Image (cartoon, rainbow, N blue to C red):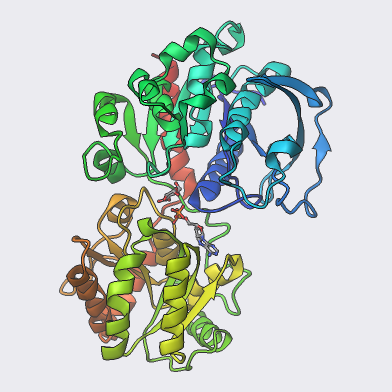
Length: 493
Ligand code: ADP
Ligand code: GLC
């Protein structure tokens, strides 16, 4: 593509991620890497996106082709001599090619993440293969974009065992923190598997003495730029409450830590075009939303009473998401107040049991769908009146932004990206988009739900709040530009 003088040169960007939607997803990481890569590609940058070819990826709709010069590439990891191959396919919903790292010994497992003794090898391989892929392609990245602990070793690898290669002389590494709660901490017995040689000195030495290697910490030490997925989370993780032990390091690097709110892929998440819904709607015609509510209540086997407020929840059932607070508040609230609840999620057994019991107690008003279901996630967003996300911490959170677009008023805890994307309703002025509560306790959540149930009675105000939310723009077009501006600034340093 020819570029005139006023246009800036497109960037070469290599992205490595453990999850990319829709191929392999446990949470928002997958949505974000897919949407960011696709948008960078649409904007004309040269993007090489690599992920593991897990056996559980549904390959039936992908036209997978081997990359001829990347078959049976030998690699040594510690005492193991193995090999990997890289295939390519088109990322669904985009024209971007995605590269799939094939190594059946490591990626043919039941789940994306495992507790196997080889877990570290699975992501060491991803990190090194991303670099080797660039070498075989003679692709010199301006930016190496790493995501969470799984690819956090790349910055150190680029500086150490691959530092001899002039291909990377101008490469800058960027580590994006999606969730500091997962750091990839392994016993120091894995040290030989890292193949760092003398560069092992550049690992965190106190950790090594304590018998540990922390992948994310290694990335925080060596990446040229650190980003995280909301401005508020960028601040929060520098403090004791949210830093999960990495706060001191993050404070030391605070001038290279930037928060960029995630975007929403409105091709996927738009009530006007959503193929998962029985009826579509938009801000000038909300009739379809009511049809979605009726359809959802029927499908879930709940009493069909359109006046009774319906609260939706779609989440990983992990403590991060505030499930224990729901446990303490929802049973008594359901006994005292008239509302229904549609919950979709899977995760920790104790939380699954809780929602199962809740459904058993309130069969007409509570439905719990245990598992992962993309269609139902869309349907709950559309059919609910409110969406509940009382997270302990939330680096960004996507569902509250989906809710806004679907005219479903979010009830969220004021933390991380939730605080950055939802604005408190002001009943007098009719401004705001949702309900935020601060303190993580029963009183806080009780107050927030009660307020939602009260405000929804004021139909004019509620409609206004829905429209306020629907008019918000969290598109990736805008957010990607922020990444590109940072990437370019990094190149000029
Ligand atoms: P996190 O990444 O911490 O789980 P996010 O809000 O960033 O939180 O992203 C969660 C993503 O995963 C959203 O796209 C949401 O719709 C989806 N999701 C979570 N649980 C389920 C589920 N049980 N079924 C379908 N989609 C789910
Ligand atoms: C993480 C966070 C979530 C964020 C997502 C994508 O899983 O928990 O808040 O939206 O990554 O960045």
